[in-house]
Image 1 (cartoon, rainbow, N blue to C red):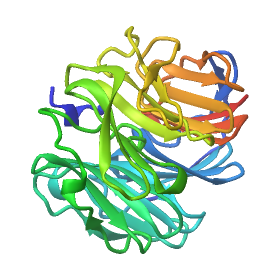
Image 2 (image 1 turned 180 degrees about the horizontal axis):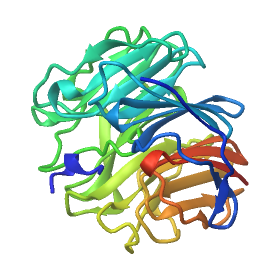
Image 3 (image 1 turned 60 degrees about the vertical axis):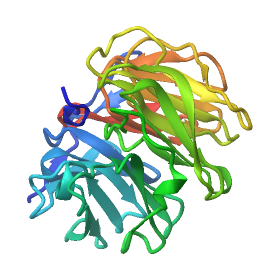
Image 4 (image 1 turned 180 degrees about the vertical axis):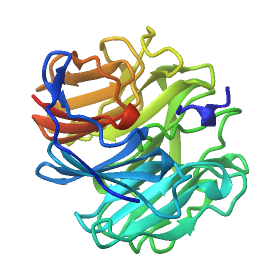
Length: 337
């Protein structure tokens, strides 16, 4: 199977009774859409936005959800999402060529407009992230032998590709995974990191302060198109976390989690419950990772424990003791630690 093929207008309100999954820490309200949700962006408190397949967007406040489709984008798969606030949101679709697009609302989802599209027929956008209200990045799969890193300084209005020579050559079959909008992350002092798979050992590319990217191997295997590093994040102390596995084997064994200490040149494997992980988030000394095998959490630097077996795609910690997650069939998860 090609690695890209993985991943596997009206309103609907949901405030139905919820059920607890796993240990009871994760509450999953009734879904408001059947979309495969992957993009996720909290906006403060209990509010959040999520996005997914078939042009669906979800706006939520706690267990209450409003789901709607972007008119004119019903065929798009919105795997990336960034909410500047409750009114101003960008949604990024992933796909070959012009199927990768960027749409924007500035009125809380009432109206949307397309503001950018990938015009490279060999391109494929994977992830969207922002440093602040103006500066942001889109990561795309390799074209002309190197990963595509696009930069905006005007909140997404215009985009420029960073000099490809600043990114090491990609290995044969190496690519990023548009699984959770988590394969690119922002760290201290302008650091940018993205993770890859499909070409032997999973790698993390790191740029310090706008300089060229350096590629580092991780202990996560990537010896098949379905294997590799799926998401990366920086902790507050500068630790760089990466998670992954094999999406074809959600319960599979093997290293699925690794970290790089600040200043180190090596990623070390981290003991964790087995299974494929596609999303990771860190807040304070809490780290959460999730995937089709369920959700695991480390509190206060302690060992990782499974808190749910419900399949999810993405996770975002909103505090050290709370998070929002999203996943298959429109699933939204609300975690309290």
